[in-house]
Amino acid sequence: MEDLTASLEKLRVNTGEPTPGPFEDLINQLHELEDSTTVCEELVKGGVLLLTVKAIQSSSPEAQAKGAELVAELAKVENCRLGCVTNGLVPILVEKMSSSNTKVALQACRALGNICYEHVFLPDGGRVSVMESGGASQLLSLLQRAAGLPNTPDDHQLRLVATGFLLNLLNSYDTVQDQSMEAELVDVLCQYLDKFAEDEDIPTHVLLSLTCMADTEVGRGLVVSRDITPHLVRVLRINESPEVTETCLELVTNLAETDESMGIVYGNGSGCVYQELVDWLTSDLEDLQIAGALAMGNFARSDAHCIQMVESGIAEKLLKVLSSHNSGEGDIRLQHALLSALRNLSIAKENKPVLVTQSALEVLLPMATAIETFPVVFKLLATLRMIIDGQTDAAVKVGSDSDVVSRLVGWCSTTDHPGVQGESSRLLAWIIKNCGGDTSIIKSLVSAGCVAPLVLMLGSEHAVMVNEAALALVLVFGTAVTDSVVEKTKLAEVVTFVVKNPYLPPEILANVLSMMTALSANATALESIKTDDLRTAVKELSSHANEQVKNLAVALTEKL
Image (tube, rainbow, N blue to C red; front, side, top):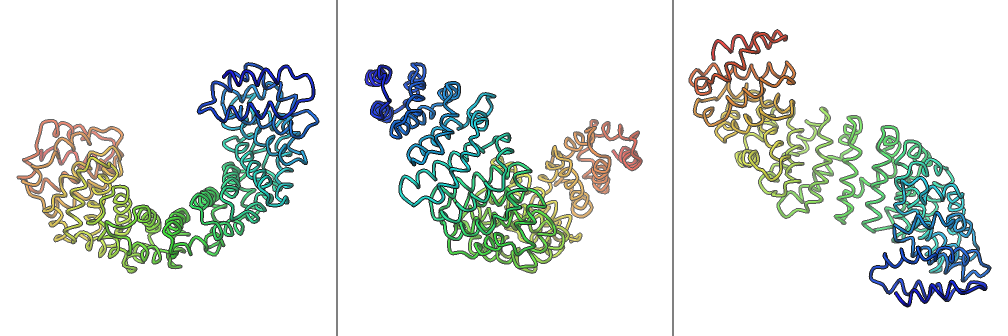
């Protein structure tokens, strides 16, 4: 600290033209510190910023660069950024971005980027000051000029710092974004993607900046209208950096936020970015396969897209990849991405029979007995549930696999992943609903222990799950119920709780009462669950406003 104080004192007593030496000494001393936060704050309190102003405005390019570099170092500390604004540094630094001296422009740009970093919400914050000082237009000019500079280390660093400054300026700040939404900026960024596609960092800065622009409705429309997709494809083909790939996909996902922009990127199944992502599914690189699968899941967000994608063979490609990774040794990231895409594709009614004929179950069912990773299991169960909807043969196939059913019943009681617990119960209910009343399937499910999970599902806080459980239990109680099976459940308590729920829609309430009516055909089973609370709760529904609920309640009350 004594050395720093001495260096600061040298700057204070220098009454002549500023020289770079004392500034460089301060910068070097800051670099030697493990944590310079407190020291930087003390330097700002000691008036060092006014001394940097003098240096930046001097006639010496070397002093200008070192003065701006010291500001950049100080502005790394959050508490020093506001001082940079209030001491009038921003307009001075904005002006220096136009310097023909690369080092001066670089350090001015770096200082402004640090002043803007996460300095968002203050009305007198760095970003506001930069915009009010014409910083956006100066930065655009600098980006245009820097694109044409040779590939020397200093010029490369200038481009890197300028694109980083742009990202800080745009990130999470709608006011700046609205003022920066100019086609010229998008064109310059596309130029950077083309010229510096192989760089490790510049494409990431550019792609993140475009993503920030696309976060607003106006910006998204602008980015899409400039047709940046050929530039994205070029980067994806040339740059193998996982970070660049991930950032590029984030931008594609952002552009696909609305139906209109997604349609442009998708291009009716022939968009160049979309086609490139499809090709990744057959890549030898797993990271590209994962990225391609995730992208397919993003595009599969409308029935029209889903149907067209399945018709064009996307599901077959996904299943082929998954068939090589459907064991416990498969890459869980790839499994999760593939299942996410297949789940989305299987939502469209027209796609379900197609997926069945494409041997989806032959690929998926082995996973139910081999996979232990719950996030993957969750996606697997949801995919199976979507595929068997309305597909009797598929539901029978799943329900007749005793090993799969055993895993489902076991997962119904897991406490490690509520999503898996819920999806397991739902899949059991959907097998029963879609098996075409196959008594052998229903009886085998009852024997495997599915009644207790369905009863618990009946008490879910989600009305849709209550309804699914009630409909499944209607079929179970009408086919294969015994008093011993019912006695092992908490049916009386659950039904009492459900029928007392004042927010349950009457059509679901009617299904719950229909379930109890189906059970009442077995007098012994009904006797095993009779309680005063249950009878009172059902009797209260005898005056329900809904006619069907009222009639079912009256009839059931007599039996209870």
